[in-house]
Image 1: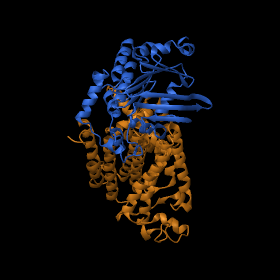
Image 2: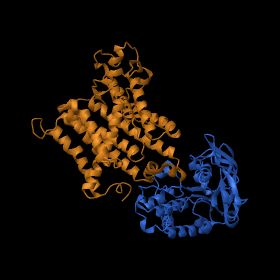
Image 3: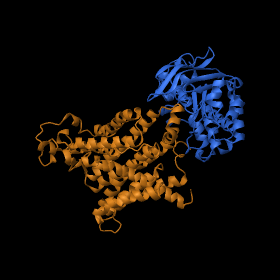
Image 4: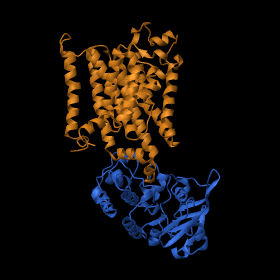
Length: 361
Length: 269
């Protein structure tokens, strides 16, 4: 009994248990213990790819919380993801130490720009705990302030989507500038270490992979706990009949602000896990198209189901890595086609299709 | 301090520190000289109206008379251009938001039934139940057995006890109307504003609604806007006729019905 057991039924917990077994036992064994020449060996390519997709799945969960459950289509979630990534990236840049090309205490791009000292934004950036605070605080604070003004002014629907697109676009332009102090259009790359561990070793990669898996499962349970609480029912009520919720005595601005901020923080954490695994963060992550893609993952998987968000992120990104290798020029056509097909034939996404096939309305 | 307001002490509604509803002089709602205009069109034109504690007041009037706008003003949805709007003697409704006004004790039923279509009937009532409605409380909220009993009682009253676990969107139109009334009652309002509550109901449902309203009067104050004259005749004690944004006539149904001005604008059509 208790708060946890009520979240999912026996089958749900079994599925989560199997997923945990795969992430924490099967993958580490196949990747680290099985010799590379064995057919069962999992190469670091697959570890990185799956780790990356799990980061996207965390973002998709955050998107589903706000869009699927509260009906707010934010098209700026890529920004929160990128901000978390940048916060982590600053720390990773400092961990390079004097091993950069210019053998300076400053990150290479600053030497290149002929800067003599770190800008104030890099204060404490060599401290891991400070980076962790920034990962949560920067996306959270931005979402809180931005959301406060947007929701208080009753900006809704497509208008909210548009201003969030504008927000991430503006941030991208800002980060493109060298003077902003975050590496301009090259962003951060060439990371060497994290917490003293060499970042490219299979062991470190596997540790990051496992932490990402744990975060994904944790986020799923947190999100599930939220949507099954009264708070979650209020969110869904706001989605369906906001004025009725207000006339019931709920301050809908506070509810929307709470879920928007939480959603941004989750994205920031996903971004921080993404950067050390992928090895690069640049302003391209803030491009408006990236944020739209997040919405596509959730739409493909099925809105308002949580599991669908994870499935959607997996399906679309799995297809993406296949297409961009096999037929790179067709990827965007395929993505567009997928979105059209899902909108026309699968309004409930893949989860809706599965439910239908199992005979559950 | 009344319970309606005390629940919000120190919270987001803390500035409703009005000391709660004070209706000791027998008036629960007092509108005076209210004007509202939209792009030059006077939706309300120097409207004055007062509702006594426990009264059941019917408001009628042709389309565009300002009935719905009046409810919008009372519930904080529409801002007025001039005039005063008081709930009891102390709460100036023009200063509060919809949620704050709901907390103060005014419940509203919309013209078109607005319920939470994807929630179950039970959840609809749970969400509207009077409680601390701040974010943190909602995250950790857990229904007490007393609250479950209250919901069960309400389900019986609105005759949806068998449909408690049904998704509200699947209810019939009349049942949705009843559910919305049930949701209002869960808020324990002092004043109920009901905009066309029997629209789309069967005759049988209409009769039962009339009985329900008559039983509610006394404990609550009710303002009913309705076009169904048979229904009005059944429940009416005092009727107010609105026309072009102001009160045309007011009094018992028989007197209003025979008023030549009323016949001209409305009944005599």
